[in-house]
Length: 550
Image 1: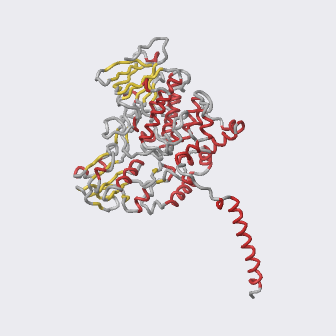
Image 2: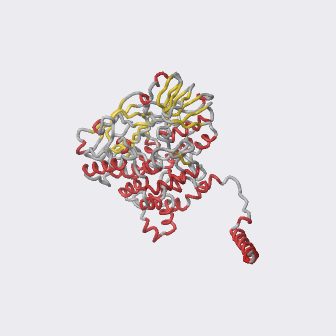
Image 3: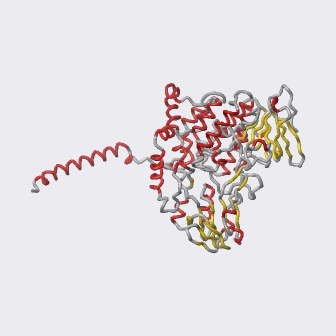
């Protein structure tokens, strides 16, 4: 079934998972002359974004109505823009269409073995010399096979282990209704006309609470810390991330005091709606944590269909007592939106650095403990930006390291870099395991791009190609910037950057808009001039009367 390696063959790399990370990893292997063999436990590509009616153990799961929080221009692969007619924020089915287009365009499907589960990944006895791995898989017929690979790319996702902190809620064992995690939630139909409490106000908690509020008798959203909330669109109805994720903005933020930036942004968000009035105001400052992205949450609160509550103190049967002393009775269901943990049971336990399964990873990719850097874990990070372009850069770097084209620093230097990153994040994320996952979006992209050799040279662009350079520095930090030069250069990258706003506008041009000459610049200039003339004439008339009034 699988080819036997000979000395003359290209290095073989096992890619575990065929979701957004796995697909780009297959392509990056091919770009670097490697031979990818992808193992996907399901019957389709897409990973997290493949909707299924029932959740499956150790796999990601989404609800039917999920819509991405990052716009198409900011989340696409760097050498394959989404079709211009796609909406700016796609749902899971549109994203699946995009994955299929990508896989077909680059001929990736032939490298994927579906319904094949990876059981174990172990170093071969001669690993210190060969860097090779022994991978045991189980096929759809239940038969196990052992394979030898020169490298392994783990792309199986980290939203697979739902956290259910039931012990945090005294009396929950007395609750007679339904208790599920958001991992199990699919749609609001089972909760029609019921009273439901949603615990947790992250992006999933906000989405689910809003959706339930349209079907339930009453929906309550309980939060320990509150949250800053913003919609997907900002100035003039443009995508949030295209306006916010910009190099010039990062530069300005680095120059201004953090306290001032917090004050400015909190004031801007509160001008949209007062977070204190709406019961949303968090205990942390706006730049110290993630902002919840939700278009409808304030409106549902304003209508009274969604009620914000403090943290749950205790549960007494179908009655829930909150920490502020308020009580809600006859609750039918509780939905835990309390996050996820990650687990890679097929990996050697020696890669874990703690009892709770922590993985120390250099640049959130490479375990520094390995004698040979031939295993990489992709997508295991959190950031205020789109995951897919960052994962693609991770894959570009990892495949070059496995191919021997790039080299990592010594283990002690990698350990120090990891510890430095964790310490920098502990203030906002006191849990070390969670702190280790955090990366600053543009600096992280640039750091990985520098390793690959694809960082955009902005100074050179401003001198040699000002139209492009200005867009790269002042415009959105879109993925195409990392295809302008170096390994994997794409000839269409420049044009993709110059036309990105055209693709934003395309899906919204659904009817002809008449041009009114009355709204022309000359009209407004004339109106302003006329107003100034009238004011001058009135002043000439009134001033003598004012002077003679004594």
